[in-house]
Image 1: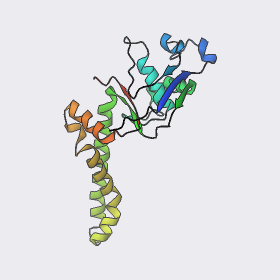
Image 2: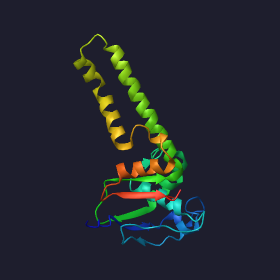
Image 3: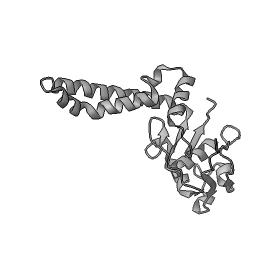
Image 4: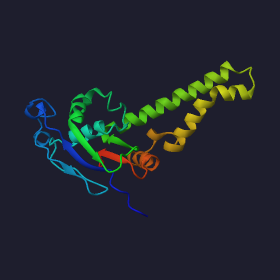
Length: 195
């Protein structure tokens, strides 16, 4: 099997008025003094003490790369990430080939994601039941046309995550997510994956 090329090659902090800022996240020493980071391997680890800025930087990169999140809220709407979106505007990402697939995962948000998938599945199942009731006197063909999009979405979610992602153990749920969503050439930012 051929190794995938590194997609994201370099991360730089643009120097601006934020250089002198005392507001978060620019007040975090590792962010304030961030030197360009060259990525030359397919997998990179950010290592440091708690509170050193690893998660903040990853959240900023996720926002700058417009990655979808595996969480209850997208990066661009998550109120807790407003400061990281400011950081994202100051980051320059250099790509060898722009990754169009991938995601950002904060371990603590995973169960919010699993719950949202379960709620979405339940809503779609309710829609199918409503269509069955509304079209009970119609032909099976008409009921199928009306319920088709919801039925297709339920089938796709079950194909990707199984029937109940949140009914599995912690580790099994993560493995199911990775098996269904990791594809070659993507950018995957995993914050505290050991959790």
